[in-house]
Image (cartoon, rainbow, N blue to C red):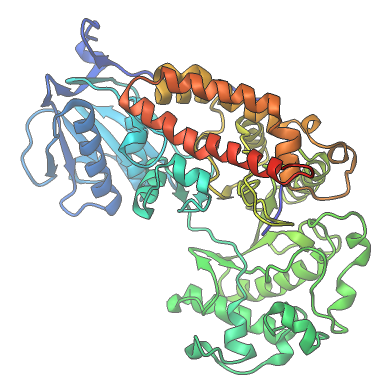
Length: 607
């Protein structure tokens, strides 16, 4: 598992909330020149027009616009092709014969750029490639007041009106971060229950509506397949075996030592020219359209090159060529899993591959991690220009000053040294839910940290970070805040929280927000943890059961939180609000109660 911290940086800029005009009751009608009506009195007022052979994004966008407008108004907007006669105002969705003007030529758009605009009597929703669907979903949010707070209908918020009229103004933009991705499934009980046990399809649709995705980038441990190909034939995948090359693997490990790694060496020998040549051949094979070799990871113009996940404190080849490149002094600097002991060694190997690849594919990249023993930037290696680096950060461990300070230091070192290089992030939002790092599983104290996320993303924007992978859908609010800031990091976190709790929980908003903020302050404040956390700046720390229920979820705090959730339960009067509070109570509060009860039951002297 790669690495992270809280990054105490930056302040937020408040962004004005986009306007929407919805005709309800006695609300005054805007002038015709300033409005665009999608429906009037429950009847369609426009026709959606797409190309005769539309892009996949345009087809999807048309279906999404039609479905959401019907949810809001009850009216189903007709969809027509650009070859069909249409009378009245239109929604020109995606490239078509109706959008042939030079200023609407998507070939001139930047990657992921999209337009929401008004042309004569028509609405234009248009983007480059998949960004056409971005235009649709941004229009639904900004102009039609739709919010997706989770997968499934019960977690969507939208107005209800017969007449839907929006203000005419232009939005032309693209998401702030080029790459925005998150696990497509929820691996933690709290998130699954908050999201009401969603299917994979529901989650995928939810991410798409929030404009997750972006450029085709990939970076992960990519060499595991070499065991099946070059160590020995695997009976489960015999077709993968190519030839036996034991000399390509880490030397100096006895058979008994290899047992800890499934009978195999822990790594490859990254000084062996045969390994370099094979990785280069695999990368060229992918970029030439022949597909990546088994176990390799590649996407778009990126070929992932990351060693096996064996931790940060050793486990490298012990041959005479490799060992002098591993720096024991950098290993002894501290006790963090994130260190620089193998940085020169690893990035020297990456450079060898990158240089060879550039000879045949000068426009392609080798993507690699800054992780574990190669987290720190190298001392004696200048990276090739066709190498991208993805830094692995425990951004949710904001309560551990030593981890936070160390990761801030080496993160900033990468940013300062490599200001012209594409830099990406791997963010561990899987903690503290992935809490059995050093012991048996327990029910953790929730890691709410929305305001910390805001400060971090403000800094990531300032530092030119190109994109991020978020490991772990941990809870609903933090996931929503993270996704919104990946799209637009200038959004104000307090405004997002106010809107979320007000619109999602209705009359129960106030106690639900107080509950969230109480847990957040408790979790993020180092003063709430054992003294060792505050004074030991040389070690990694992860939440333990004792931290969770002796120091964080104290009797006094649990009593306060219990009264807030009881108040929210009383105040939730509508069916949807009652369902949402019940989901939160089951996923978060019951989890916490069970966690504290388990801890207390196992204390000495407990009957």
